[in-house]
Image (tube, rainbow, N blue to C red; front, top):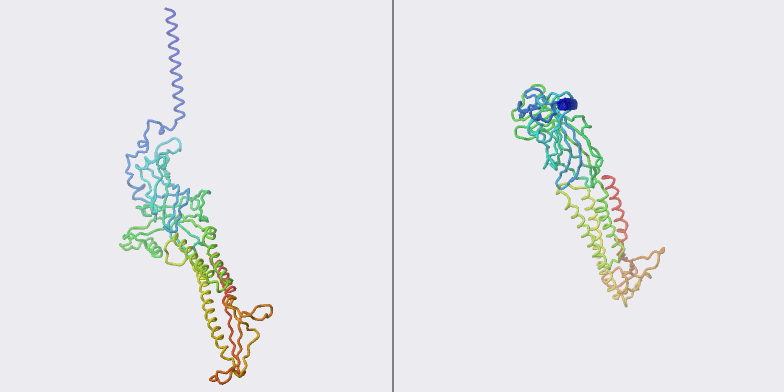
Length: 474
């Protein structure tokens, strides 16, 4: 009996001790979880009282406009297309506002973070991207959406999106141009009477990744701006000057026409300036065009009678320039104005074409010269047996058909004179056909004068054109 009583006492003491340890453990759990709103047994919908409110209406419906701050973190900028006149940007956009309907009791000021499933049950700003061609929200591996609610009702709503938007480019200075593009953010339904959209911290609201780089452009600047946009009932925008006048009238309580009844909307702008890299176009366009022009000048030093050499050279350079122009225009939009690269290529094409025309002129004048020479040689035997002597210059020599076609001339100042001087003494009476010594007639034929001038004029003119071109566009 005594042993049974001792065992009973020991069992009772062990039970009391175990119960004390359990109570102490429970007290520690309560201390670590002082915020009872974060216990596992509490549903987020019940905590935020979502079922008690109508979240189809904005916060403070019927009262002042709800302020919505925005900041953006640009992740990448790519796919800038001159043909489609657009760009693609991936970024994180965060919205900040206060909705007292989502406030909850908490012993700490820590917010609660939710994923995209709760976003569909509460009110969020209805942002859209003006002039966007396509956009999507990233969903790998889950929807890239984050919602954070604080006890006082402040809300942070963040998501990751990619947008392809329009960028109106002026290509008149292409490829020596600088482009400015904008991504415009605006509320789709709420005017500035209901929703005041603003950059949360001005220019500091826009952050960019330092690793952003483009193969064809240099990013010079990112900055933000804010404007008001007015939409009429027909869905069109009024001119900017009219917008300011109407804005002033509205603040002065004047009535607006019924046709302009859609309202004013806050619009945020992400502006960035791009300067195009020129080195690629120097290698692919400018240098080949310049070399083709210089190659066309080689024909000025080739014998004028070497038709198989000069004609194919001219045709080859013309066709090559045509290929370069076609290749450049194939990758460009069909704009109705002249671009800087068009000016350079077409002027180069004109120089190449003129080199072909130059040889055509030389060949034609050479043909005329040969005809005149044959006529002169045919006239010379007619003077044989006449009383009047024929006075020939010592600079004349017989023509060999197999020679270069130049008549033998004396050396004057070390330079070979490529000319023929025929001096004929003719009688005053032209009807007798006799040659006398009373008058002289000179025939000067210089078949290479065009080539000589072309060797200087063509390079000089092209050099002057390059100086003017690069001083204007660079």
